[in-house]
Length: 369
Image 1 (spheres, rainbow, N blue to C red):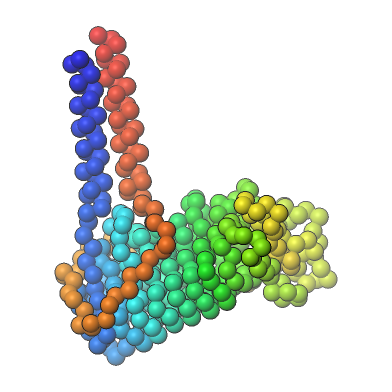
Image 2 (cartoon, rainbow, N blue to C red):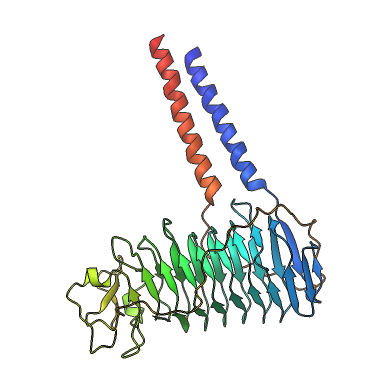
């Protein structure tokens, strides 16, 4: 009986220690900075502005920004906004406004890097790394251009109309995440992007209307399926992933190995065998084709690359203040729950292993005795 009590006590102690560790991950406070409707900034002195141009002047840790002011430019100056790397967290930059450009930020370790819930904003030249959703747009008329997005569960989440994604680098090598998650959308244009992954999980969609052409897809996963569709095929409109002939479709790094008999059509740079983007696991007879796959990568000028390392953020802004506007802050999130971020996912299995090892050790001692 004493031996069993020892094992039980050890289990309880390790379990309590694991809860404490996870609690510490989740309990890190996040301060909120507001850019108010009157143009004032509350919650930090690290953002200065002249006219409609706002600029971050230092790295910040665990500070989110809620933007309520319309028609401004927010320049991160290549400084880093680093999140607590726990779940849940707010969106790091929450755009509850219109006519805003968010540029030159490095955003790491948030549940959502940049959240857009109001129409007509631009997200450009940002580096968004290690978030659950890198960019999440639940609105219309967005331009997302020239961003570097890496190691996210969903690099780009979209529900909207007339949103354009161009000249972005999406790099999910070594990470089983989606490049795009698109639902309830129309007139979405995805062109001149570089998408690299060793996972087949590239697009997830209910197949709302979007166009995909003149992109470079590298290192497709072993199953060679790029698109995961969940839909009723009788309700589906499945356009090809190309822009017709002779404009062409996309470059696929595995095209020649997958279709070794393909040849170029009349020196056009286009292969004569269509690329099968997917056969949906839910509807195996449903196919989406790139009818005019490109034989060579698209020349995309000024593609962004990974940011240079910067010193770890050491500054946390002063406690947040209430915005001067009486406008309500829309914090719309994805319709499905987010996934816990890295520390929680690592700590829980680690303590489970510790428990098992401890029990095995105690049992071994008991057997010897």
